[in-house]
Length: 306
Length: 272
Image 1 (cartoon, rainbow over the protein chains, first blue to last red):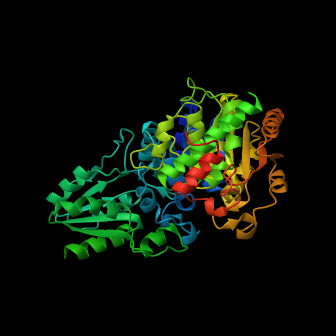
Image 2 (image 1 turned 90 degrees about the horizontal axis):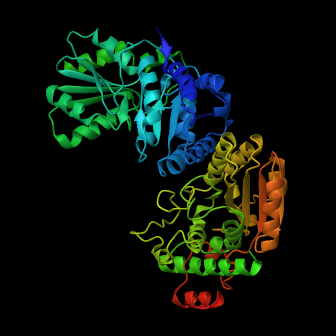
Image 3 (image 1 turned 180 degrees about the horizontal axis):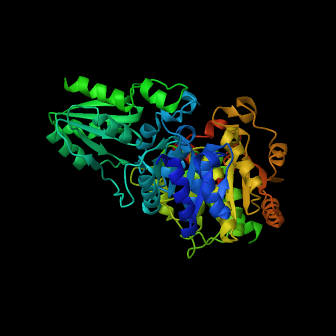
């Protein structure tokens, strides 16, 4: 079933806001898009629309968290991580406050709205702030698990969510483990390390290959699963990271930061936005255009192992 | 408390501001001295903060939105007995909790980490909203700089505060007319303040920020207002109390040398 991670976010938040008396939700005039409207319906007195003023919203969230609340603050990734970067940095992360920035419409799969709304820098921005933990779920169940988990993870968290409906990767028995990657397919020679909706594209890509690659899903981008990445590098010839983000500063960078000091003979290739802005178009067409759909990922891997 | 008693506290606070900046050989004396009487009135008459409740939120809280005026906050907390007076001399030193701009996790009584202008007032809005929802009747105070009002976020926060009818929020504008690069009127004028904040839906009061009767009356009036946040525009003198620092923007962020320190301390009631 194709469910967007933002939809799973709204549903989960609607349950959490009723369960927890200290949980508050903020939004910046995008409640229907980010789906926090579901939480608003469930407990309107704990949901505040701060209008089109994301910087103020993040610092208001900090003030609420300084009053012993757990605050989920949502907008599009571009305006949460981008516009409000400095409020997140100085008012939330520096005092290590309990704000969960849940940003939707990340990456180029936003589609027709075009480059101004397609945030491909948020992982780099959020990863670079001390105290911040960074997550990217790939499907509905994993989103539900992460949104529940961040409530109890002390301090600031950034959860990267998507607009586009995506197929399920996990069944209802899935349990999220903070800081752990998941090996979805055990193969040889090549390990594909992906996150978010690139997990589904990588799984599909593996079916187009003439060998069985390993496929790893990384839902916690910071702190990243160092142990798994090092083990994977030791047992494979090539690692290919796949992300719907600029290749600078995102998942690929995080993996290379782990591997660089290890000196393991394993090459790493980074698939992602190759330091270019996106454009308008249908989400599926854009993934193809930028080489991030299953077909292009498979072609690139065949070329690498040739 | 009598005005004479308040004046003694304010003088002690001013002496400690100058000592902090002198010890650090850096910091912001001008905008700290201008706010000394405002913080004295808040911490010694208005706010129900004491040693037993300082580490809770079950009391009035204060956000120093103009975080660079940390010397006045630390000096006031020391005058209240929450910080050891001797520790003030560690201000801005590598082994001190007294950071250049205040960190709420290092110092009891610092209610919000601030320093980046415009953000503190938003944090105060968040505190005031949660107090409303929780039925916590304590008040939230925030001190803004006049130059700080050039930050767009101040007006985003002002809009939110009136929208959510935050009558438990009282902001004070330290209207000393000077910012780093000169007169606010010359750099880029954020004036007029009164009509702007009124247009944003605030109850606005205009007082002499060095007159305890006027400050006291304004804070008391603010408590009576329903459904609106209050902005107290406090007319102040940058560097107030040290003659050569008064109305001179060069003292926004500069430390006195030995001779200047001696002169300043003499003017503020002599060296200890």
